[in-house]
Image (tube, rainbow, N blue to C red; front, side, top):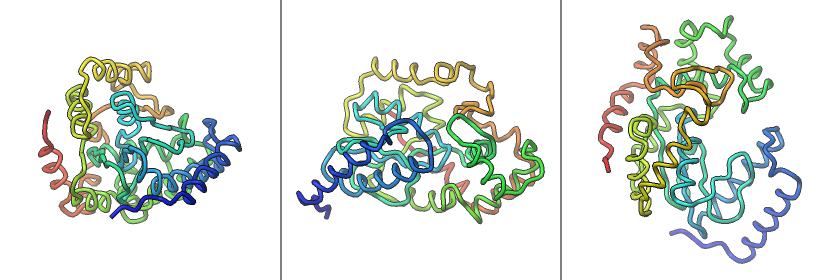
Length: 285
């Protein structure tokens, strides 16, 4: 049973909100202080505000397209999506890499783990507009590869690293898969389905969350957040230094060597095949 916060708890939360926003952390500054403040405040809201206000918790393994999904959902279901700023004490879309179930509706964003691996490699080891040089240096020191430009050559060892000694996040894809494929009353979608039929998939998600899909509004939303409009590039045109790098489905086939394929097959221990069956069984509109 979910307990409603007491008035004293609400007063404390509202004071914390005024404090955090008052020290200037609402600006888009991905500093160490901002990251820590943001994480603490979001955790507070996840455990309190989600019991009072309409809330959507979107969980994904990193580099699964969760940001893109949440930006579109914010337009479709009229909930705020506070990206790179502290959320207000009210209704929100919360996006993160969660293994815990919080109050509110939960939406799980999936992506082929092989494409995740390629995207995560670039995210960790190359500076982008959302990743600092210090973060890249720390990630590179942890990996210790001689030539980080040799993506194909490094992938087998990288796969081993993120499954046996994960740092971002602090759990493996296996743990994420085991958790969220076993949870009931959860809405599921995937990066691939959104790429294949964004209008149809967003309509299905909106309906599954209890909303009334507006086809015209959803079509405008999909177009506004398309890869081409956001990046200024065609799908497949890579910019290694951009958070929106390539926007391709199935690009893993271009960099996975037989050794890399063997490593992920071994380390996922049958989950890769189960994942493919799971996402193929998701309902259509």
